Image (spheres, rainbow, N blue to C red):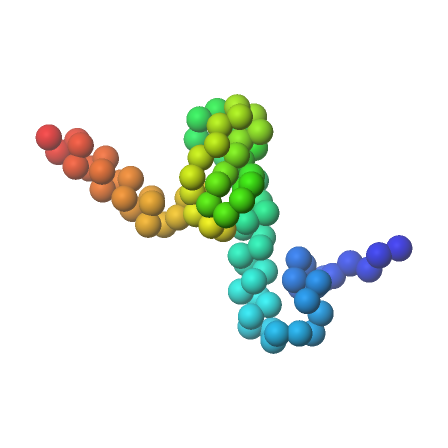
Length: 90
């Protein structure tokens, strides 16, 4: 039987190497990159990262560009809202 980690989660593979602070940062990144996201086209929780910056929905088959670790970066969200505001201002 395999032992489970209680606190460290996915970073248990690193053992005691690299220091606690770095492992905590890596844990946050790895959890977000391996999570499933909601597809903006079909609405299913089926979007997974295929390679760096490329996200694929297994529900509708669409492939979209996004962030390296999260599907939508904060900068992209700010840009979308700015574009929407400028379009409505006309």
